[in-house]
Each structure stands twice: as C-alpha cells, then as structure tokens.
Length: 222
Figure 1 (cartoon, rainbow, N blue to C red):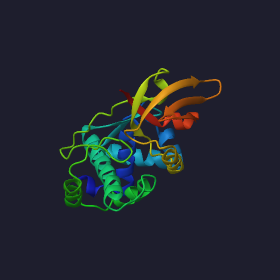
Figure 2: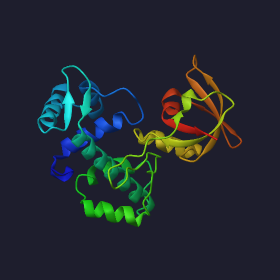
Figure 3: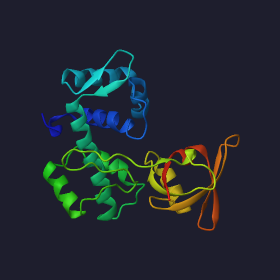
C-alpha cells in the first residue's frame, strides 16, 4: 500500500502522530489527538483502530500511540509533502509564512509523487520549510531537528533562531512585526518566571515575550 492509497484522515493521523514527537519526547495519546483535531476522542479511537488493523500503528488501551515501520514511512512521506508544499507556496507563489499551513494541509492529499519530486527539484532540494522545520529526504530519511527551546537558554547567551512553530498564524504575524524568523540572531536577557516573561534583544531593541511566544521559538547557540 502506498501513502496515496490511504484516506485523507489516515494520512492526517499518521502525520500528526509522527510530528508530535519530532520536537518533544512524550508520545501522543488519543485524548491529545482529539484536542488538536477538535473532535471527540471516540472519533480518534475509531481511526486509530483502523490504522492498527492496517498494521500502521500500535496502541495499548488508554496508552500512547506508536507508529509501526510502515506507518512511520507513510508519516514521513506526508511530512515531506507538507513542508515542500509550504516552501513552494512561499518561494514560488509569494504566500506569507503565516498563510501556508492550511493551504498545504489541503494540497498534500491531492498531489502525486511526481509533482512532489518536481517541486523538490524546482526549489533546489531545500532542507527546511519556511518555519525552520526540517524537510525529510526523498528516500524517506527524516533530518533530526536542531536546537533547544528559547525558554531553556541561559541569560546573556546569543543565539540564532532555527525554528518557529507554525501552529498559530496570528503569532507568526506578530513575529513578523518583531522581525523574528529562522536565522534571526538575538540575545536572551532574562527569564522572569513569576511574570511569565522572557526578555530578548533583537538588534538594538529589547522585546518581552509571553510564555506562548517564547515556547514557540527554538534556537541554536552561536
């Protein structure tokens, strides 16, 4: 079975299961998937049972969901489709980085393997998408993500943004206003946990970030 032979919902489930552990260690559960997809847990449970019958996931009752080797291969292919499409929409069609996630969610179910290959060639085989997430290789090998959460960086350190979560388009627009994006250099000035504020310096400006904004940014040390 190829990934194109799966239903759109099965493709979404596999991609979500894989993506949930890319930047975090905790495996995903039915409850967490239901919350992210805004559906009932019973709906997700039914979908997971179907994937288990196809040999794509394993799931212990009330436990975490794990991908089988076949499920992981399909999931990585869907992640590759999604991130290449996001990159194509930004670089070739002029979309903003805050506009592409939902568009790619639709297109990734319709494109052929040939089109994805052509897009990859057209873009010069990019290794990351507009948000800094690594794009898996054409042979199905995912590139490990690099960086640490901004919230874990000690004050007075100078770092470079490597990735920003694309979960919230409004937040991406806010980061654009602040001049924050992949490859932006900044200095961490202070973490103030009781005020839930992280203060950074970008160029000659000091910026206070709330917890959701700070947690969306991943950085590497310079």
